[in-house]
Length: 617
Image (cartoon, rainbow, N blue to C red; front, side):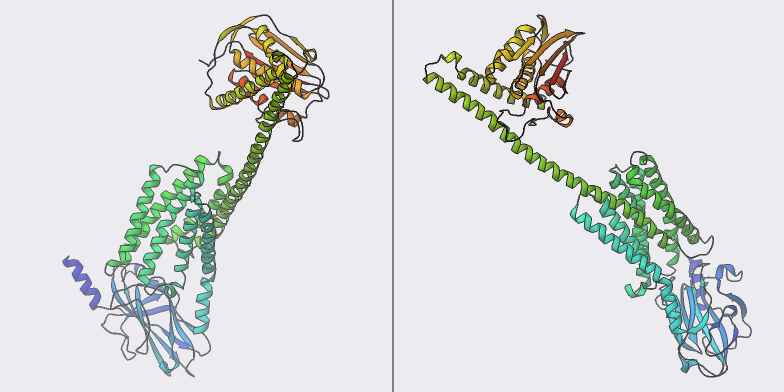
């Protein structure tokens, strides 16, 4: 503790100086880079101060590159002499560029500008220094520039070339140098708003929200890094804390975007990285609570973030690589973006680590990266829109099917009602009740109720298959008679051949399937109907052939669907549209199959199932 106090006292009570000699020609700019002098004293802004014995150093130059200053921490004065011959210059400024950590600039003993605060120990390590040199302060002959710097690391000192030049031109150049970054930042923020709007409408698509936050944080981060920083914030320290907090959030936001895009579960490493980022964010927000030198805390946070960023990139590549084969369409644009972004990120990491000095590149590379991601999300949005249209069309088809089903059921009940009405008339005319249409109407209603209940049980998986021994020919003949009674058709239209064999099966399912195949042939054709059954290779085969006009290939696929009928809505042929659908469900339940062969003048329905199957009661 005593050594730290001694160092602080030494830093606050000593100073170092430098010197340069240049001749100013009005109307031109003057490059002051080169050899300056330094020495120690408490106050060195006066032009009358004798600085002939000061040591020399280079400008631009960092303390860490000067052996005499490598371990120096504290205040440093730097002086330069400029000779004026001629008129006093108008509208000129001293352009110091970037200086760390804080500075005050004097011209002929007059304070012309400061960045940071020596009194409050507040730093500014990002703002380029441009201080006006009013004409009234110039003197004929010798003019003295004195710069007071307080530094806390080897990076302290003047980073850029020092010049005296036209103030307006220098200010414009400094601003234009930041224009590309400002434009990119604004585009990032606008992109964020675009996808945030989609998240408002589609709340379940969290990838839109995380991408919007990622783009917004990225935009504000780069915007703060421009010369608009102090137009947004009144304090550099607070602006830098916000800048770091935004930077530390970016990897976690992008990883969450990927996870929600691919609908993955967060692995433990992702939770660990998110926790690490949260610690860094808290550290950045609390870093301003300490006293100068605060830059060391920022440097520690930045180095920790570089390690976290490297780990995050590895995790992102792992997630993409693991899912790319199956999710190529959702990831290909992200891969393209990473191919563009990765070299820029590595470049900026090396610049941050002071491996070499160069302009940062990620602000521009991210523009292409976000462009690729935007293409990816735009495709997702278009897919979502197409899915919504498909769902809308499906709903319309469903409504149409509901209407069709009501129409079909109404048609069936109308046919039953007409049968009952005809039967009553026959009774009034004195016809035998057993031979009247009342018998067919009663059987028709019974079959319709039975079919409706069976359809529900088969669809819900509630039907338990029975295994009962019965005579196949007897069952088939009884079923044919039911079909003739319900349809009111003559037995002369039907030609049948069934084997006389005892089998073990579910008689109700077999009778229902055969009934609907025969009923379908009798109702929808005018010619003969052939019904043939046979047993072969442990299978029961039925074929029902009619002499109708046949069905087109598209209708052959749909005829086994519920409520689909091979007639138009104005047809007078009764039917509920569930008969062949029940046949298809029965075949599936028995482990068999049903098919349709159609020609120009016939249709053949084939139904088969094994005599032994797994399942049932």
